[in-house]
Length: 421
Image 1 (spheres, helix red, strand yellow):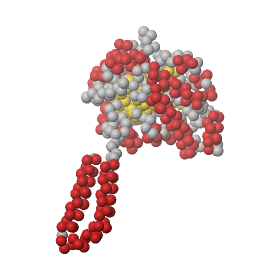
Image 2 (cartoon, one colour):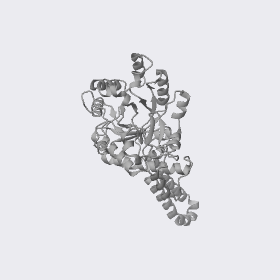
Image 3 (cartoon, one colour):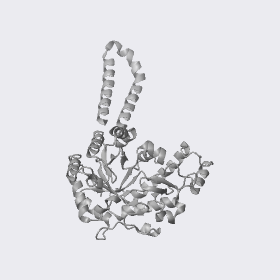
Image 4 (cartoon, one colour):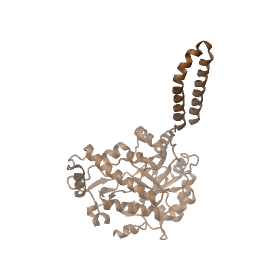
C-alpha cells in the first residue's frame, strides 16, 4: 500500500515539473507568467513538500488476520473415567489427533474445588478434592504431557468461575465472600444445580481466584487458561453489605431496587471487567505466552443477565481467543446466533470459535445436528469446540463406529496450533 502512494507522489512531482516547464516554454506568455511564477513558486514547492511528508509518513492500518483455527473439546468431570487412566488418555489424544483436533480444555475448577494438588486451596482450609489417576498420578500433568506429544494444546478450564455449591467448604468456611440478592437470598439455580456466587467485587475473592489461576498456569506446562460464562454474576446479585457500601461510596446513592437498572448493571459489569484486566496482567506477567481464553454466552445475554462484558474485555485486548457457547438444537436459531456482529468483530482480531453441544447424559444429540452446525460455523470461518468429550461418541445415539466416522469427516485436514515456548 505504501509503494502505491509513493508512485502517486512521484507522479505528482513529475506533473508539477512538467506543468511549470510547459508554462515557461510558451514564448507568448513567458514574460507575463514570470512574475506570477516568482510569486507562486514558493507555494508550489511548499505544497509538493507537504505532499511528500504526508505520503512518506503514512502508515496504513493493517487488519490482523485470524490466527490458527480452533478445533477443540472440553473434558469435564463426566470424563473422569477416561482422565484417570493413562492408557485411555493416550487413546483419547491419539484419536483426537487422527481426527485433526488441536485443543483440549480440561476442567480444573469445579464445585468450589481445584481438580489438582493445590497449596492455595490447602492454605484456605479447603480439603483437597483431587481427581487422582488410577495409579495415584496427577491426571492434569499426564494429560498435558500426552497431548503435547501428539501436538495438541491443553488449556485448563476454570469451569465454575465465581460459582460454588452452598454445600462446598468454600461456601461454609467463607460466608462473607459470597454475595446476595436484594431479598437476602444467596442461591440461584443453574445447570449444576443450586449454587451460590462469590462476590467478584470483594478483594479477598479476587485474590483467591487470582492465586488459583496463577498456581495452575505456573505449576503445569499448560498453554493457557480459560474462563467461561460463570466468570460473571447473575444480575439479581450484588446487594450484599460490602457491595452496597462500595457502590454508595462511589456514587453517593444506594443501589437501585431494580437489578436491571442500566447504570447499576454497568457499574457491576465494569467492576468485573477491571478485575479481568488485572487477572490477565497477572497471568501474562507470570507466563507471557499463555492463551487467555474466554468462553461466554452470546453477548446480549452475557451482559444484560450476567454482567459479563466480554466484548469490552476483547476491545481492551485481554482476550486471546473467544469461544461463544451456542447450544441450540434448532439450526435457524444457531445460525442467527453465530452470525452476530460481535462475533464477526472478534474474528478480525483473535481466533474465534463456537461451542457446539454434542450431548448430555440425559440428552444425546444426533450426529446430523452436529454436522449441520459445524458446517454452518465453518462456512463463516469459525472454529469449533465440542461439549463434551464423553458425548462425542461414547454416550451417543449412533453406534460407536458410525459416530466416529461422522466426526472424522468434520476436519478433513490438520490445523495445527503452534505452541509458543
